[in-house]
Amino acid sequence: MKAINKLDFWKTLVHPHSLLAFEEIVEQHPVLIKVSASRKSKYGDFRAFPGDRKDTISVNGNLNESSFMLTLIHELAHKLTWDEFKRSVDPHGKEWKNNMQKLLEVFLELEVFPGNLSAAIKRHIHDWKAVSIRMKEVYEVLMVLEGKELVSLDELAFNAIFQTEDGKRFVKGEVLRKYVICTSLENKRQYKVHKHLLVEVIN
Image (cartoon, rainbow, N blue to C red; front, top):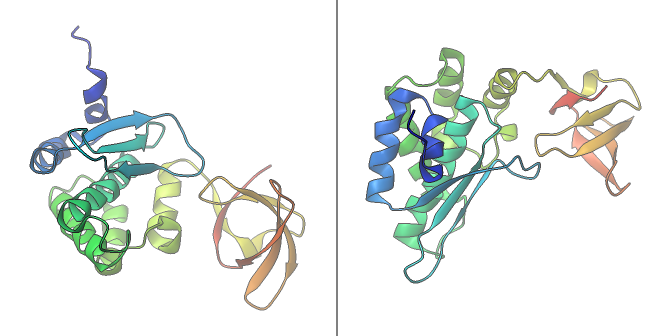
């Protein structure tokens, strides 16, 4: 069996029917794609380099297929925006959103996402958010695909421990009208968290 080049490993983590489209985008906008170890603070990132060094995208390798593809599309949208505007626009401004929409439309047409995720993407495609947690439908489907049980923060008991999308853990405290005062287990500081936020319960 032929060994897989580590620079091509990302190709094994996307839907087979999406591969040609990804390769065409990378050919038009040269970028190195790396598979990273799990990072709690982010799923992926894009880094531009001066001179002859190739721009780089990294995506966490522990993501399921759909999450991996959405993260890769997110970072490719950064690459397209960088190639056109460099630092003259906001990282997640209208230019990035326009590129994100164009790329999502390509992959939706290929039908490489599960039906319920495709439907959620279509409902948010014209105003895509930088983080999926701000798109409740998309986030909820992705977390189910990850095998994680999500509940709304207001459903948790007082003093329950929960985890947010970025891996940060909190203890639920006083409930206000729209928010809940939660204490970070990392720095012991208190934060106001919207009571309808979907979180992962930590036993």
